[in-house]
Length: 393
Image (cartoon, rainbow, N blue to C red; front, top):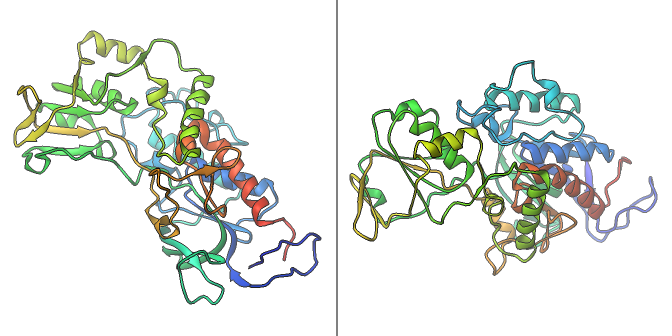
């Protein structure tokens, strides 16, 4: 059990001088056990902190795997973007021979499960964080800048922590833009998050909206069983050359610049472009990758453009991405006038207005390229800021 102190001890074992004291359950609470959250847990352990004593990891999902466990069945290890290794354990070593076509929704969660066990991270499930706010020393209020972060949950009651590493990612916050007439559409509308298999669309015309990697992968898949129309807000940028790790780092750096300036993070793919693999080249030859600009409005039986042209449709698939799942942090008032959260720290994981809070899986660390490094940076910087050490209080 931790005691919150304004001045951390300089010598192990000595009493801590403090003007206000409040009890806490953990020094650090990690919310989310996806790639970034597990990376943070690993590095907290490397720093000498012990799960369920010094820190706790909570996750809302029923099992290991982060958002991977909810991906559509046709997403395999051959079609997914690269699955980056978690620190200290190779993904490849958990795969049997000939598993290239294995479902990502099974293979990656299996890897995460083995990882949690190997490093004894003791993730607590199913815990849904409802709200995080400040708790004053007298424990009577939950507003303003208090001494303790109070975390209200379903599944674990009320938790009190000195610092927070938030790794909730984006999967729980799908984004669907507003378009005139959307409520009148007589067909089916769904988001990428709800997609399961192309076969359910056989014999129906599907309008696919979005210019990201998931959009073109699903466009290719669905076009093999039925007719499709592809629309995007801007002209897609294709890249013929393989995607190198440095390309990803460069893209992450640009997103990092935005969040350091307090701007909403942009997408990494908007910088890297869409990689053309053999499947997409074949789709291009079939004429599937003919892109149209965004329609102006939705009508009961289809979509209509500003020039009056119309496309009848049975299904609209919104492959329009996700937004960061941060609603539970609203009482902390982290957003600035620029519309985003101003980030600081070595890898832009620390919230500038409240350095007790680190966001991983936000901005530059929303990609698998940045998640591991973000977990390491958050663990080191937050333990340093809080004055935590493996010595028991």
